[in-house]
Length: 287
Picture 1 (spheres, helix red, strand yellow):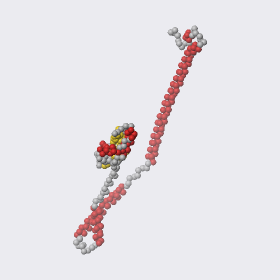
Picture 2: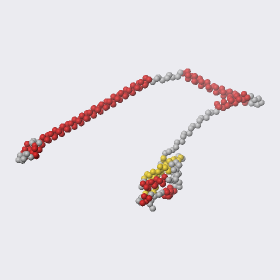
Picture 3: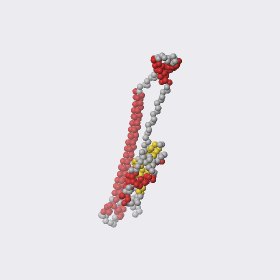
Picture 4: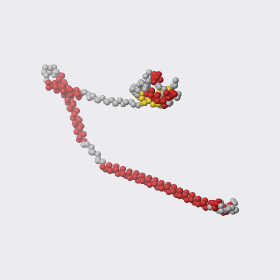
């Protein structure tokens, strides 16, 4: 029995030697080897087909990737050639720079500049001579009134004054004042905002104007709601929001009462009023 090959159909005859072979079990056992062989062939065929498909897919992807890289390389080479051709055409179309100006024009400008200086000097010298002559002949010319001489001397004197007086340079324009719209933190300020009368007055105002929500009071809800707001430059309270809430009804009441606060003393930075963030806890306590 140890040497029997189970794949050999002879062992089936040995098992069913003294039994009814017309029964269906004998026929099933007889065809087991052929069925196993057929199943093995089918599995190997399927495995070969799948492996061949995967191999073809990988090769096709590699070929497509190579084609894509080659196309990118060709397009890059074509674009580089086109750019080089455009640069060469631009260089050919660019006109040459204009020739430098002639030297004689510069010499003429220098001559005109040198010609103006003696003119001013002559006017000053003539004015000095006129002034000296008028000083010497002042006593002799008391009775005689020469209208033409007087007008010429006054005109020359005014011209000398205009030449001698220094020209006033225009005052530089003051830079425009830029409004500071930044919202500062308390730690950044030299002078922090404050409620009129101090913290004691602020909490007294809150306790007087705070209305405990009936829903929270019936359910026995109490606690502290932390709100944050901006103290504007004029001291008004703006942008009230809940930072840490307790209950929707308590949060709503805290925002309402803080929004109705009177104007604060605004914070200051560098002597100017600025906008400041302020955080305030609002306590709700059941009596």
